[in-house]
Structure formats: structure tokens, C-alpha cells
Length: 203
Ligand code: MD3
Ligand code: FE
Image (tube, rainbow, N blue to C red):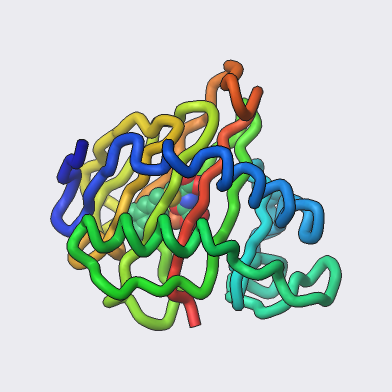
């Protein structure tokens, strides 16, 4: 089922379910080459979410700032290639949401163990805001929150469950958003974790 959650934003319930096995196998291959790590923000805070990337560019943060980097700073090597199943799912979801021709060059993989959270922020390190962002939720559920373009705008909450895909484009592309603290639990396939794939046209 498809649900409009904001102007330009569409939640596709269960869209990733047919791909779950392939997605999780691909995440394991990526994480073997570019392990999950907790990065440091410019202010010196160690993020509770552990991250890795695949694709031509990966999102990274350190004391010098946020950026997209073609190399994994931990290894000095290029990020693992984006698996075909990632591209296909991201492009299909974008098309279903009304954004044809989405060709992401970056996939940030976020891993939340119980207790991890992502505070309210905007995604604005990408070059072209006319391109949407596609987000795939796997494993433990989470309460996702999003507001508006201004930090003070009222915030709405949405549960995101295993297999849900959200496409953010148009007016919602620069909305503030975050993930509330993930509660403890066990998912049949993933155990005690939530994995989120965020697809972006970054470069
Ligand atoms: C709304 N990740 O990595 S994806 C991020 O679940 C990030 O790990 C979250 O936010 C996660 O930057 C949420 C959902 C998302 C992504 C981009 C958006 C929501 C968005 C851009 C605009 C508005
Ligand atoms: Fe974000």
C-alpha cells in the first residue's frame, strides 16, 4: 500500500519485502569490505548510529565536517560497488512515487542497535536537491519523525517497519527528520538491530 505522508513524500509499505534476502546478503558483503563504524561529528560527538556506504561516493563525517567521499577514510579504498538489487529497488520505488530516472550514486547504510537514535537534521550535503532520497527500513521498527523546512516547524511521527520504503522529493526534500531511540526487541531475520539504506544522488 502506498501512503502520502507529506507533499512530495510517499511511504510504500512492505515495498522491500520481496528483496529482503538479497538486500541483507548484500549488506553483509559490503560490511565485510567496509565495516560499520561510529563516526564523529564536527562538534566531537560520537554518533550512536554505526554507518558504512556503497556506491561511487559515501557520506562521512569527522572533526573537519560532513562530506561525500569516494574513498572509505578508514581503509583509503573506494567504497564497495552498489549491488544491482539496491539500484533496482531504489529506482522502482522512486518511479512509484512519481520520480522517474532516479540513479543514486550513493547508499548510506545505517545500523541502529537498541538505544541508538538520529537527531533532527536536514540532508543537504548533496549537489542536486531536485533528486529525491529513497530510504529502506529493515529489522527492528523505529519511530521516524519529520517536520518542515524550518527547524521550528511542527513535527509528525511515523512508525517505520521492516520492508517499508519512503521516497522524499519535491517540497519534502529538505524537511527536517530524525529517528527516535530504537527500542529493544528481536527481529526474526536481523535480530537486535535496525538497518536503514538511504539512497541519494550525491555527486
Ligand atoms: C526526510 N537516515 O541517514 S532515512 C540519514 O532511518 C537519515 O537511518 C534515517 O536520515 C534512518 O540522513 C532516515 C529517511 C529520510 C531520509 C532523507 C530525508 C527522510 C528524509 C530527506 C528529507 C526528508
Ligand atoms: Fe537524513
